[in-house]
Image (cartoon, rainbow, N blue to C red; front, side, top):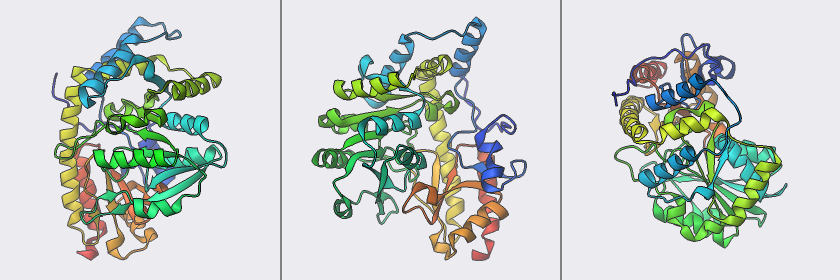
Amino acid sequence: MARPDFDEVIDRIGTRCSKWDDMQSHYGVDPQTGISMWVADMDFRPPAAVQRAVEATVDHGVYGYPGKNQPYLDAIRWWMSNRHGWEVQPDWILTAAGLVNGTALAVDVFTQPGDRVILMTPVYHAFARVIRANGREVAEFPLRQDGAGLYQMDWENWAGQLTGREKMLILCSPHNPGGRVWTAEELRQVADFCKAHDLILVSDEIHADLVMPDAPRHIVTALAAPDVADRLITLTAATKTFNIAGAHIGNAIIADPRLRAAYQARQMALGLSPGLFGQDMVAAAYSPEGAAWVDALVAYIDGNRRLFDEGVSAIPGLRSMPLEATYLAWVDFSGTGMTRDEFTARVQDQAAIAANHGTTFGSGGEDFLRFNLATPRARVAEAVARLQQAFKDLQ
């Protein structure tokens, strides 16, 4: 496999790309002069194997209804076994139209209007959106930070927040936006909590493949707590790993027959089924060639992380949370003494960088912005220089 060129700057403006074409309307940052670091997709091409698979389908030239795709199922099973040590049975795999859809379906199937769904905040903003859209209530359980600045679960304080209306807990593992890789012990605590309070556990593991080289290994929740299979839905996807989010494809892997039947019945009731191209892309990505590409990608992102963290830490009052996984830097501006509006204006108006506002991730995110580091290194270096210039009066 030829070494991927992650330094190549690919112009995505004008390609119906949300990350670049929508940054003006969301953040007031001109895509021609600004840097887009918000939407969590990468500015890199996927592995060549993915492109070849798409081209082969196009070359065939007939785009009829796809039937059962055994290579797709086999590829998912191979990847989970070889990369995560998880032996998945073929009938456990249900295909969703992306993991936001997969999460929304779980909320729809396993809770009722008025029920509370627990989120460990701050956390991926789409969770709260689909919970509320389903007529359920978001129960925010704020994470705490330890001495090293890493997020920790706060069981002592959380116990007092239960009302008896909680029916589900959605876990983000690894955590977005904090980048934590949860330990086996922490996952065990989550499982025990769900058992004790009769909660369905949805484990979103979309970032499982994007763990930094020196970080702890990601552990699949199903392996850390096999005794909660009767209440566990594991959500996985190749889309984040290989930058194919536009395929809108992911998986709900459900070992328990009762849970799986309920989930599948709702999919059938809504007429949901996977498209042709997404399955072909996943089958090509989950391969030895794709694995080598991911290893190169993670090493590159780790270099971007080091560059970004060093530059941000040189600005008094700014602190980037130690990143164990994902390509998303979570930066705390509280040390500047500025209001949220003040530091956000400096980033958007002076540095011309579009970054996610921390408030969208729920309680605990008020003093933060999230920066996407999955972009060519020269662009990361430019972003650092712009931030240092925007906050130069603090230095």
